[in-house]
Length: 72
Image (cartoon, rainbow, N blue to C red; front, side, top):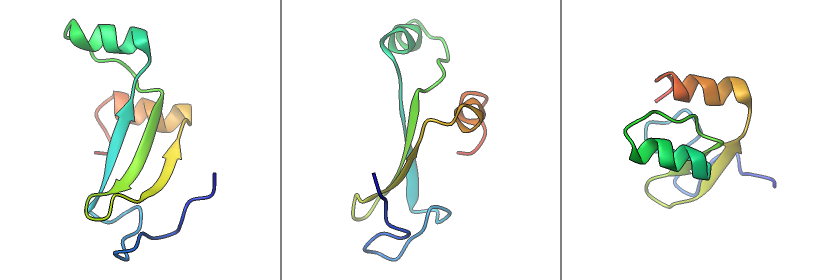
């Protein structure tokens, strides 16, 4: 899928108004419900004002950073 460089508001991936949304597998959700910290399987970057998705990643190195508490 091809994502825009910026949203309708003019924000890019690095702007503070662009938030991440982590997605987890079924075992990840079970671990989350039990109080654990699962590793996401996908992270989406979405503008909080216009809800346009600016990108998504399944890159293991990036997902590891989210799992370890970085890049928030």
